[in-house]
Image 1 (spheres, one colour):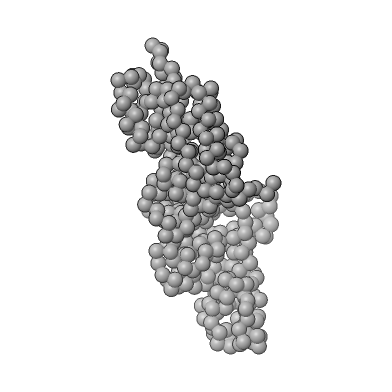
Image 2 (image 1 turned 30 degrees about the horizontal axis):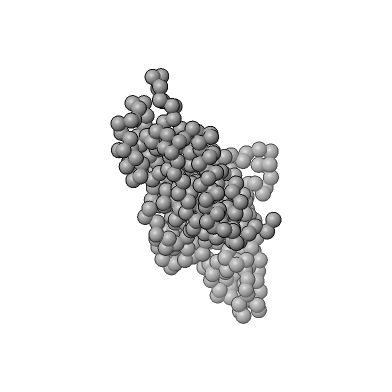
Amino acid sequence: MTGSNHAARGSYFSDGSRELACGAAVDDVLEQVADGDGEPLSEHQQHCAHCQAAIREFINIWAPVRELADQPVTVPHRLQASVMHQIDKLVQDVWYTLELTDDGAMRVAARVVATIARDTARRVRGVRVVLGRTTDTRVADLVAKATRRHRHQNAGIGVLGRTAVIDLAVAVTYGEQVHQVAHEIQRRVKAELQENLGLQTILVNVTVDDVLPRPEN
Amino acid sequence: MEAGVDDAYLVRRAQEGYLDAYAELVDRHAGLAYRVALRVVGNHHDAEDVAQDALVAAWQQLPHFRGQCTFSTWLYRIVTRRALNRIQRQRRSVSLDLIGDVADCSAGPAMSLERDLIMDAVTNAIQVLPPAQRIVVVLHHLEGLSYADVAAVTDSSVAAVRSHLFRARRTLGIALEEWR
């Protein structure tokens, strides 16, 4: 099948033909268009009417694929929350029992403590990024064993009573006194958790592991 | 979260148990996961399931991620495998009637416009490609990944990716030529 027949019927693909009238492979030209919008033209193509006609035609044929690629896809608004909810269930939560009475236990999830600590630390001057976590499983197990006798029957695994251990990974602004920033984070986080959650023994481990340039604004 | 923090930092922190580091990665890449899943499985319901499963699985597999590729390339791999499993299950349960749902979800007055019909035609043409061809078209032509990256994501060679693309483009060419 030849290119002249393509022109007559206006079809490059339907009959299974593999070459243009000039001998150029149809699939190669289509690849050239799909991957690079037909550019750059080879020496042969610069002087070949068949190739140039095919390139023009393929650009039009392929345009809807480009348009589809550019179309924004709206992500379901609940997707991120659903993912994190599932992960929360997978992560063994450490509970902090704050009130123990005959009516039961009031508990605050460890991740809530971590969030409050993180948000407090973010407000400290010189802090650029903070990530927070509560005790890792190993530490939680040790504390759970140590406090086993004091655990309330309603309390969950790894109850720490009014004790919290918080790890904060921090990036500070370049030029700030790292030592002072770390101390200020410890002071404010302890105060915030004592004030808001009634926690008494609070260890705040601050790891400064990055320095970022000062924001332009 | 600061824009200056890169994925590699967040991955390291997430591996150490900082859940909010992973939450930031999910925020950054949920769009990628959902978009690829939608293009491959062809309907919003399954795409959401696939994207969700993939992002949770990535969390579970994170301790094994050694950073040989970027987090997004690694996530592409997880999403495409789950999407492939999903469409294979669809085939077994003869639920191919779901195909076309992508277009249905945007149904409205504008559907009568030729442009929307052509978009539907492209979507449907991609949907009926064999799975291996569909995935390389989605990754290369819709997501913009290089041949080498597509090969890395699909655990194949660049030559195999090119071969799939050649056949897929010809099939798409036939479908799209009818709209000219």
